[in-house]
Image 1 (cartoon, rainbow, N blue to C red):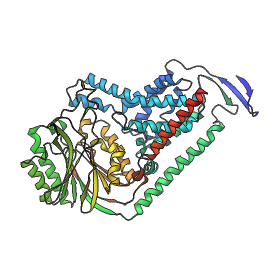
Image 2: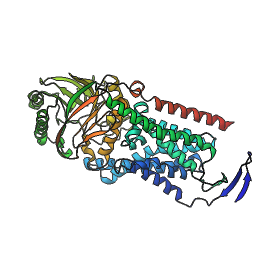
Image 3: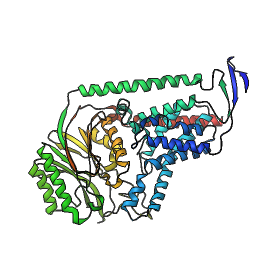
Length: 537
């Protein structure tokens, strides 16, 4: 150890530590993946997200961007493998694909998604090598990549980091302005500051003599900003939620959720069609007896084409008329294109208490490799995972349904994970949101829990309640502050009635959408451009 004096006369210490042991960096990267995955449902250990990136960023210290990309990819691969493992369950249980091949598909998916984590770690190292303030730029870069993942190529915004905090109600109220990305940015800044405080290892560094663990002066602004965010944002969130609770409601409605719990193996079996319909009719009668005004059945609740005349269509219309309720339900549909080819649609119908069909909505955000093959002209060899009647095509219009007391939009299946989709409904005048889904595909995995957690942010972004009808669960009612007021059990048939209300406010996010994410992306591009120019000089 040698003592040196800085240009300002401050005593400095040159500290030489042992180099990294072989395998240490990969272990740290994998540890980050495990910590981050554990912060999501289940096991819902959300505090781990505040430190989950630390081992990965420490492992990347001293690495060139290429090597940092590889170590970041490993951390991301472990994270996605542990988070979306249910993909292999779905493929193995509901297709003819062998389990070993299903694992291979999962690994390919996790490998692709891990590239976003890799790009973040490599970007941090690249910017740091050019003496740019990575503590500030790191959160912006993370948000830019997270936002890009939500729409680039096929779009898969599942498990954005901010979703891990869905139970931290005071903090997540900021989604009214920034969407989920604002929460992600705070988490990443917290991780970056911790890494900045930790002493270097595996390299010779100049540290203040007052101690290797003492934060240098350059971290003081970040520490101050982080303190203000960690304290100020939850304080504002608590105040905002309380102010909305005191506000007289702009409207109210009694809504019923019918969870049929129809097994996926039986759902499309013609022998079970009448039994399925009878189950939903019974649940509707139960809800009507409890004075429900609108009864919601899940996605594709009718295992037949409702648009075709026949006794089953008549039975559905009679159910609404006999019980005097508005009935909303999912059903497969089809149309003929100009060439004469049959195209399938994933549709929702609204039927009046008079037994008349009022309006429909066709799902706009389809499930890749489930409902359609993206870039099919290139991936012509890929067989769709889910067998169906022809290719499902997307709808084009975000229908806002109307009943006498309210207007509402419907997100089908995982459309509620795309904030841009639900925002279109609220911007068009929806007072509340409905999510109809069939999470039976996922069985007893974490997927239904993850799906519900992410849906809570859609309520906060638009300050509208969200009611969720799921075939096998988890059906739920979510308040405008993102709190899950009621959630049903998995794999049980039930009818639940709730009185929902809405404040009638128009949020920043509803007006302007992902302005925060756009700003982070532009700032990241500007920093990269500046760093490239600086590197050439």
